Length: 361
Ligand SMILES: [Fe+2]
Image 1: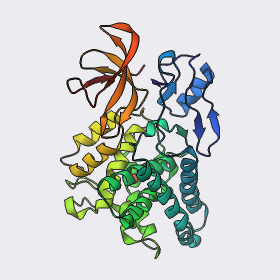
Image 2: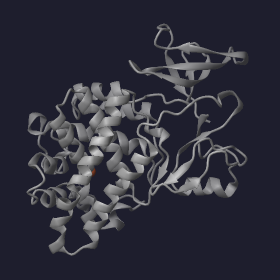
Image 3: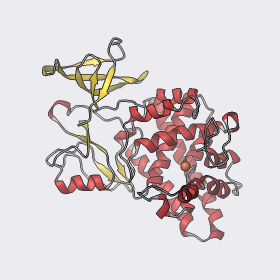
Image 4: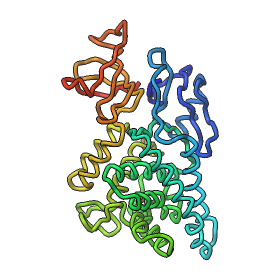
């Protein structure tokens, strides 16, 4: 299978990876020939990239970060917790987190188990789930990334449990904000932007009231948009004033935001998301944490077509767990002609060649 841009593929292309909705129901099954109508549905659902089948890459496997079943369970846990808050009256709101806290902790533990046990790099592009509300998928992805960074930074078991729940709930304040503003496709007015920024304070005020929620978890909601140089919000605190959990969640948050498609823009690919983080590594984000993240996330996922510095073109077929940005590539084209016998180049052991460009058709 190969990664292709939904905008550029034509009717008749075979889908190589099933697309689910957030409840785990199949939207489009793998093996289906995509019709114009199905292509439109993919675009309407905001899916920027998909896996397609082509003759030369049918044996390439996609690495799942967490099993589909766990992804569905976790998303539903977040969805139920978050939506219940909106549905009940003010007086009952305080019970919801209390009731759900054991469930949230269990899900965090299961995700952590997957990350630790497999020691594999994170490749979320493979997980094609469509959600009716971006915040649920986003909260889960941020949890996965934050836990991976925490593991790399040798956080203790207690710290990992805390940052996991903190990441799950970091955007809970968004449930108290007018959805018309949150999902507005056009440019926000200054006033609307201020309202959205308020999700940090609102989330904090909600979580801090709960005796079951440790203060550090409320601070994940409060501080995840703060930046090292003081340019963040809501308080503009700096450097060591920002809790380490919030710094980690801030990195995970930005990466997931830019690599997810939104109503107003397409998703970036992982290597581009990493570039964005690197650009902020001096002023905005903790450099050591970004390095830790880079060690855990796949920069060039399996199925991606790339051009090497010597002009050869191939498809990523396997990852090197030690070097997340130097995968194994199957060469399909050299000297501008298709090779008769495709062969492998392992970039971990081929030091004189770099990845020059990503070519997504
Ligand atoms: Fe946020």
